[in-house]
Length: 146
Image (cartoon, rainbow, N blue to C red; front, top):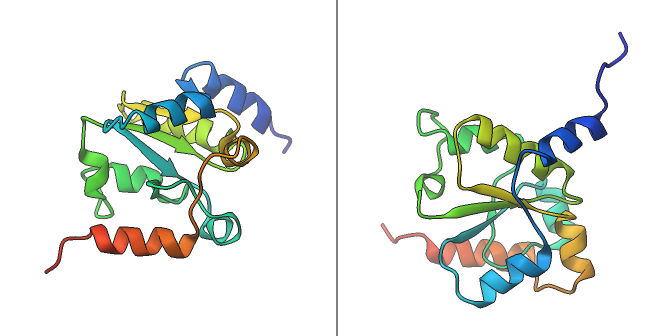
């Protein structure tokens, strides 16, 4: 059966209903020590292995995002329960993050946005990055000791 809507149409429809920030806007907020901004990298771990990620980003794979955000889910991640944060999603090109942002809005989140152009644009503008190994070390160091 042929599809009735293209992926490009879905992205365009989502983009018309969500908040989109440029890399420059996100970097400005990050350099102003805006503690309310939380970057969320929704790319596959293989993309992070190849290209790294943005410093301070939480990794939430696209396939698990809705489950990690939902407090009623057994997969809920407490980082997403902080209502004082604005969660700014990014993927490779901004397509998956547009759809993911719309999905989270449909779940009731109002504190969610995405980065126009995704990590490709982040790299093009020479924004800071960290390797996956550095990301893992940072997140391990941030976990409370038992």
